[in-house]
Length: 141
Image 1 (cartoon, rainbow, N blue to C red):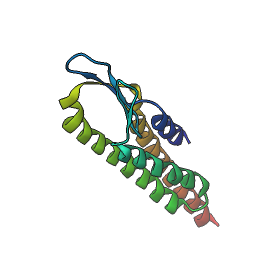
Image 2: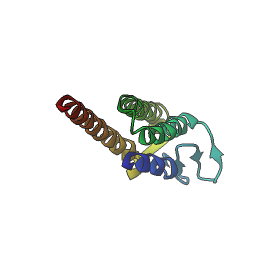
Image 3: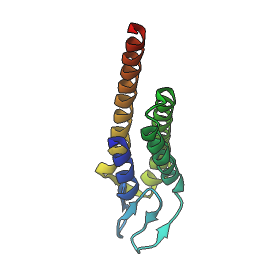
């Protein structure tokens, strides 16, 4: 549940601001668009939004499938993979575009997918512990 909250927060909050090399107003990058200094929205980085948007229903499905622990673990692993892909694409954009156009300043919301990865790992560990406990209880009968 906490991983889902951090993912949704990352979807809504700005990721970084780009201070131009010369004079001008800073641009702000969100997951869905880049808002330049004039207030125009450039929808070039939609893939950042897509990775996190796909993660949200998968995380909700993982929460609701509490009776099927193997599938729950698999869905948590997919969420981890999508969050890592989000970081890879952000690093690609950071190196190729943002460093060239100005000085980027990261916001706290860039760390939210990493925090959600930690929560997914903790969830997988808890699900596996529950599975072991249920198997041990079945052996006693």
